[in-house]
Image 1 (cartoon, rainbow, N blue to C red):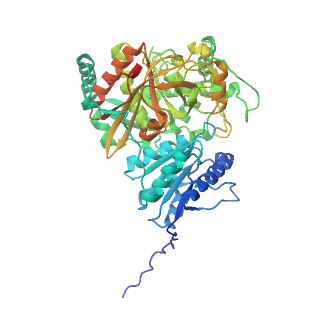
Image 2: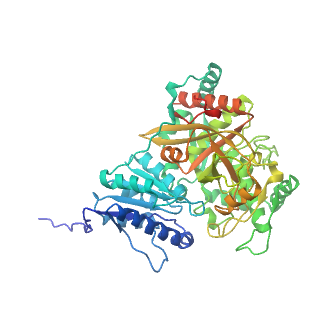
Image 3: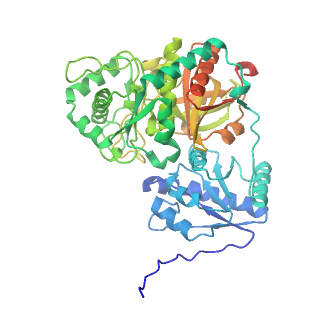
Amino acid sequence: MAQYEMPHEVRRATLKSRQVYLVASGDLRESANRACWAAQTQMEEALGKAAASCGFEIVRAHPFKPDAGHGFIASQKEGMRVFAALDPDARLIVAEAVWQYSHHVLAGLTTHRGPILTVANWSGQWPGLVGMLNLNGSLTKAGVAYSTLWAEDFADPTFVEKLRRWLKDGEVRHPLKHVTRLKDVKIPSKERKLGEALAAQLQREKAILGVFDEGCMGMFNAIIPDHLLHPTGVYKERLSQSALYAATMQVPESEGREVYAWLRRSGMRFVLGRDEATELTEAQVLLQCRMYVAAVRIAHEFGCNAIGIQYQQGLKDCLPASDLVEGMLNNADRPPVRSAGDGKVLYDTRPLPHFNEVDECAGLDGLMTYWVHRAMGEPVENTLHDLRWGDADRSGTTEEYVWVFEISGAAPPAHFIDGWRGATGERQPPMYFRLGGSTLKGVSRPGEIVWSRIYIERDRLHMDLGRAKVVRLPDAETQRRWQATTPQWPIMHAVLHGVTRDQMMAKHKANHVQVVYATDAAAADRALYAKAAMADALGIRVHLCGTREGGKAW
């Protein structure tokens, strides 16, 4: 009789009835994990006290690692080992005080049977809320049931009561009264016809998203499966960052200098130094300018209508950050790039939409936005931002809640006060970008915007759509917000119409939000209607969030 060696079974721990696991997903970059560990420790201590006040004890599911200098789960393989040893039916909290890579814990969470709670702090400097929103979007896409909470102060009675409810019942829900189903909205005939015509055109003519490597920073929620993307008429051209690197190095330095000279003539100012390790140098900027030329030429070669560069893993070890490149691409007024063959200017006088961190949901969204606004004669430049943080305006300029929308450089100068002349290039933080590179920094101009997010739920594309305005705050208040987040990055002071802070956190299924300007409030409403109609005709389930300006219902 044959004998077989049975696989080794990991011995699983068991918890007492009033104990709950805590896991902390971290970055893949150990420099970031070490720098952020103190903030995570502070959060876990406060969360532990809140749980204790509810009669529960938090049990950390994985230890502090002295050699690494932190206690985060720092890779997918580590996450799998951690979850293999846990009681799959126990209560489990994913506590996030910082940015995290969702795929570190996603595998374990997909098979965990007990109640799951994601919790984040409320801080601009330590963006746990951004990491948590990414994880929430990933869990939603994966079909994993979870509850979610956030707080500025974990001793706040409101937070403690919600935590108590989850500990008791295994679930906590948030009211979503700000959401209106599209079928309950009467879209004006003109905008509906336009949206439907654009959808039919896209499905007939089709479009290509150029994807320079998928899955940036473990963002499972940022990958659209082909079977959901193709019915919209959009297909992926799967490209490689290694090809982008190779093409960048083949662009002559003289062409990079032409791009650099164009930026300086247009008024952009670069904060240059000599120390490559900590300061922005001209050599870094010139490499970025060559990367810009290479990206445009590759996009043209493959017929891409939009492109996304992963840029964090892999490329960051070879080149300066691609954010300056991305911001240029998203702007209609940008340095010309000529074909290496016939010398023709490529994508002349228009953006080549770029989706930062190769977020394909933002890519599809940005492409649709471009089509709608081009057809309506509205500004076509659009970008994603991190839903980074929010706070009351301490300058007294407005009593409304002001969000900080902020991204690492992909924002187009058309969004800035004074355009290119309001743009500054500063070195990317060394903690994230060893080889540096310039950001494309600026303050977004006052105006009316449409915000949106495409996400995946129950194997279907969904879109949240809403209206907002960008306000201008005094320089001192802007600086306070920059210093509380990342001062090298472009910033947008956004006031959402009819959506509170907590409603946004409860409903939003991503760390990113897409934004585009319109000429005025009425035009923004019309553009939203047309985009909603286009999405609906493409088979995307649309949810209108909040109100129009002044509290007017949809």
